[in-house]
Length: 282
Image (cartoon, rainbow, N blue to C red; front, side, top):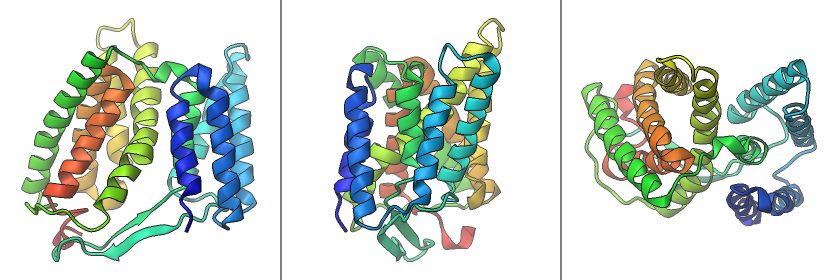
């Protein structure tokens, strides 16, 4: 399995953070998916998703009629659900690790290198630049550290109390690949959607209400929790708690702070506790 598609996707994601590098991002994206197609990891139906994402990008343009923009956002959200849940055909995501028990008491874990889910984060970074919310580095790092520590303490304490995880320090095989995948793809896509797009969009929509920012944070956190419903009710609760921590980091330090806080909590969970969860918690 060649790693060229994911190297290109990582380069596209890095370039998508500035408008000046948008063409570089599109070029890297095209190169990555061309390589994936040559490798047999991308089938022709995937082209339909890419075309519809392009249509959604056109529809949400600032000079489009309100109805067209609303339809464009609706199309994007429908595509996000399909791509994030791996329901759209044509994306043959290879399994890089597993299935294996990282600790004897854990449920089996597999790591897939996804070609579909990262598209959501790339689309948002390139099409909706307001979600980036870039701040001075000091503010970003301070908010990220506070979000990481606060979310880790609250979420993992709750996970211990709910019997979802146990204390299990480790450095398993494949940890480096897991960390790179989390930083480059998983957290970027999730935070761009839940914090940048949903929380940020609701904040702008409700900015004249005294409770608007709090409502936006809580709504985005609850939706993030619901996205973890596949793990059971406990993970909805834990996802909501974690989402609130990332939301506070986003509010104080912009999207990069939310991403770093998310990576920090995921890494704390991975290296110090049962991952992904206790077998008995299933």
